[in-house]
Image 1 (cartoon, rainbow, N blue to C red):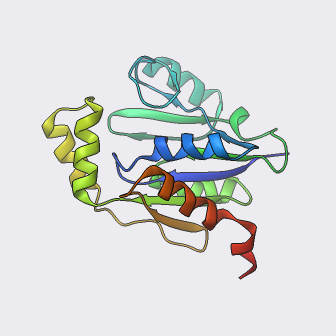
Image 2: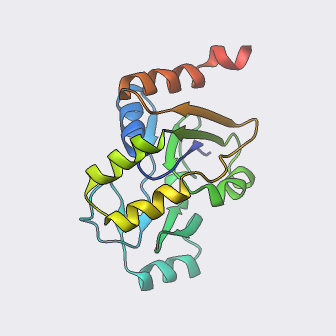
Length: 182
């Protein structure tokens, strides 16, 4: 048995964690995947397991992760236990890198992509509001925000420029069974 995995992607500051938390609060049976990241556990943002580079490397070598990647000077991993051996019908949302989407598609049946977008001004405002990065780091993240967005039949693209409730409503409508019938 395995949960249906939905990878949430988008540029830094687009609101992935906020959208995911709001969806999990509204949809019974939907849960958030807890990532393992090589940053201090008290760094803020999402709930994650913070580990050292050495611990992360040991877990990669032991085959603990279904997916793992490096980005922004850190390593990120999705433990097998977060997706596999989960009840059928459960939906799991995970904040992913676009770099591992093809691997996720190959590994997890029923995988889908929720691609969140926002205007550069929105991203800049949100990144500054987080207070985690310098102006130079924010500028670098904004420069990467224009990268090619994911494509494919499994991609649902939603703008997150407006109020969170509007974004969540758009995601729920896009994920509804009625959409699949049309």
